[in-house]
Figure 1 (cartoon, rainbow, N blue to C red):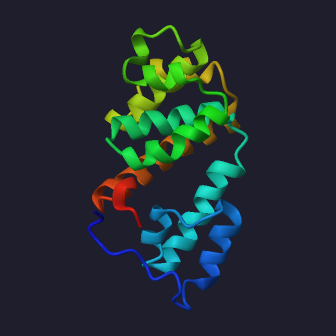
Figure 2: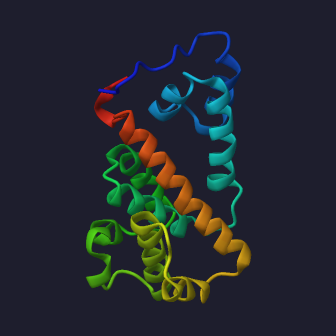
Figure 3: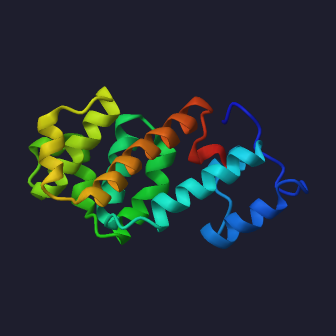
Amino acid sequence: MARLSYADLTHPEVSPLVEQIVAERGSVLLLYQMLLQSPPIARGWLNHLTGIRHNSTLPGDVRELVIMRVALLNGAPYEADQHAPIALKEGVTQQQLDDLGQWQASTSFSERDRAVLGYTDAMTRDVQVPDAVFEAVKVHFDARLLVELTATVATYNMVSRFLEALQIHTDDGH
């Protein structure tokens, strides 16, 4: 159960944001139900995540591999629960999802995917990225895509840390 109560979605201050979230996402997920405790934070978060998820040119399978790896590394099951179906729709295979925990030993990932996963691991675990790890990923992406990849890894680390600090989990049944 979450450490704080979820926002009252009928409160007049959050109504416009609730409408925007439903229009863009189809429903108000638990993450946003919590964020709506602070409408200004929810608004900024929504705009930022919309940029990362919907306005980036980063291929969807790369984005979702990053999100799923970050969720695994940070022990964020809600993030993984929300993104596994999206990952499959974006072209990540079930075998790849199954192998994420031991991706280095798996044959399910391309050279590009392996470079992305190594970059994700370095950013998530160590913050500083060794030159060799950066050079491996740089081979596959131009400057714009490298910025988008880096922003995606950083953003989903933020998401998982928020979810886990407040113990937002799928089984909240809210």
